[in-house]
Length: 335
Ligand code: SD4
Image (tube, rainbow, N blue to C red; front, top):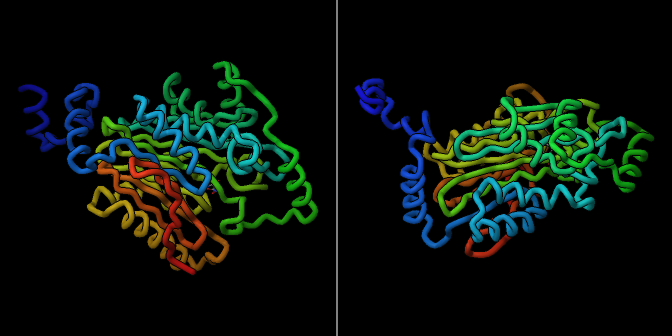
């Protein structure tokens, strides 16, 4: 019995390409590409990203894919722009510190074949997206944290530097006067870049990178480096990424939830909305207040359909495609 007959006897014929993506090779990609062309017309490569700063990062990713970059290379290139910008005080260099004054970064990356890498609570490395990719490609593991992540960065030749900029330090000192930790929707202690790309070959990729909640406890890890929570990519279905109150996104495996809803037949827009609704229902069931919480998802499917939805007003996301680059306000559940 050959492999395909064997899979058929198990009722797993359609799973063949998932079990051994390498074996399916160019044939599967070619078929996906045809599907993409059929459904996505002239749109071709696309990228979407959380918050208005993704206008630049998605444009850069799209341009790179037009020149032949893979979705994975393009998404990394995109988010790195944000990580390197000290004016973006919630990602990479310049990110707000924890309550001890230390800038600790979280990131993860995932491709269409289910390859994953992540780093959490990582200090002194600007491009934690690239470090996450290095974990994915150069280690037998999927996540490194804290000192181990920094040590790996050093070994891999990543430059190490102080990530605390004077503006963030001044805010932290001001915060110390009261030292009161609370989440506030849409103020800038809530900005992560989650970006998704779809290349002309029909390959999806995603990356999520952040300094996390400002003034968090030292060692706190949010949703952003956790595959399934802050990011999920299913190369046969679609991809999603999250921003906002990480504890709630981890609790509900948010991004996986969105992709599962797309797999079940919802559009990316409907899927993001369904996930936000379910998270809100859980707040209600647990009797927890949600007034100070914001959660937002964006998603994209293989047809290049996109969506975004948030718990509260104020969330927006950028979409870059052959139609141009636009920043769209996300619809929301609760005013
Ligand atoms: C976290 N989800 O660390 C991140 C923060 C965030 O927009 O997304 N801000 O919880």
